[in-house]
Structures are given as structure tokens and as C-alpha cells.
Image 1 (tube, helix red, strand yellow):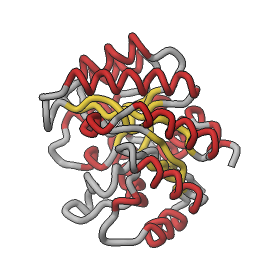
Image 2 (tube, one colour):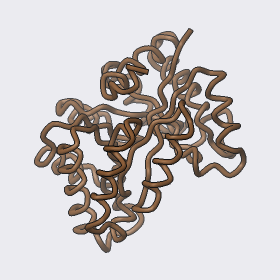
Image 3 (tube, one colour):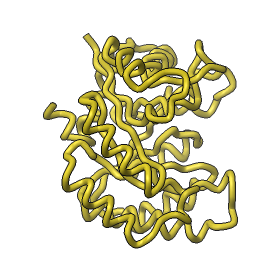
Image 4 (spheres, helix red, strand yellow):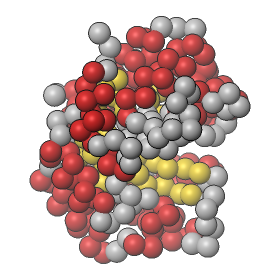
Length: 258
């Protein structure tokens, strides 16, 4: 029997099914999920969510597009949540996004660095959002990250960039995009990076994999990501599921003990 750890699911943002319905589907497939926050209010929502459901773990952090909401109280709130909830197991999703709005790049960098420093202080992994900001993201991580394991969430860069990340010990997380017919770069990454640096995710409710593309994504669809990667690499589904699960447990020992 396989187990999958879905390292990035916004299960609390689903519209077409309840959290309980989505988790029942995960239970049927033996899937554990990790849910990120995105601003200084949703950190409390994630805290409550993981307290309620044993299949869910959480990250707390402020998404780059929400950098303007970050304030002095944000890190204090995050620290209090972490100290009182051992199911909050990482900082995320944090990072840089130059796709939507380039008007506050310097602020994005500042908040990203603050959250890297905080993750180091808490000795927790970092779940990184990087969109059209590859060079800056990697350089900031090289300079400021001292001791936290790093996941490059929903990886969309080239194989060359993936290899540069792996040189720094950074894990590559792939989602539904790998199933898209025209996702040439992501498929190349899935085929060629060392399996011991690979993780699985859905980023639901977004980026729904084939065969459900066009419908709302859900966390249990991570199995289709694993199936596609197995097909691309010419290995079994079970090997992808078991190796990526072990990778996630290496990053998140709290899951290992449950």
C-alpha cells in the first residue's frame, strides 16, 4: 500500500466540495496534506484547520503578493502559533512573484528575507513561491538561508535552474502542470532530476491535472501527478509515491512520528 504526502494544498479554498468531502477522498487514497497560509489573517485559519483535522499539517507565512499586509505583529503571531501547535511544520508560502505586479519588488524581497530569517530561528523548512523571479529567489536563498530545508513549490523553471536549486539542497515540488501536454519544461524536470529531490503537490484548487483539467482541483488528485511522473521516468507509481513520501518525511520529521 502506498502513501502520498501532498506538500501544498489550499484545501480551505475549495468551492465545489467541503473540506470533509475532500479529506474523505484523501483518506481513501492514503494521502496526507500540508496547507499553507497566504497573509497575516489566514495564518490563524490554517492553525485552526490543522487542530481540527489529523490528516492536515500546516505552514504559516505571507505570500509575496500579500507583502504589503506584513507588519511587526505578523512574525509575533506566527511564532505564537508555532509554539502552541506542533502540527505547524513549516514557513510558507513565501517568496517572490514578478508575474502579476512588479511595482513593489523591493518590498517582496524584504519580506521574503525576514521570513527566511524567521524560519531559520524556528528551525523550520521553507515553502517557496517563485514566479518569473528565478535568479533573485535563488540568490536570496543562497545569501540568507542558513539552516532551513527549502521546497521550491509548484516548480515552473527550466531543468538547468532545477539543477542549480538541487546543488543548494533545495527540493523540487511538482504539481498538476506536469500532466499538461504542452508543459515541456516541467516534464523535462520530472524526467531528469534525482528522485531523492522530488516532492508532490496539487496547489488545489488551482492547476487541476489531466484528466480533470477545467474542473476544480482537489488534494487527492495528487495521485495523477505521481502517475504522470512515473510514466515519464519509466518507473512504477509506487516508487514515485514511496520515494517522494520519504523525501517529505526527511524534511518534516513531525510527519514521520505520526
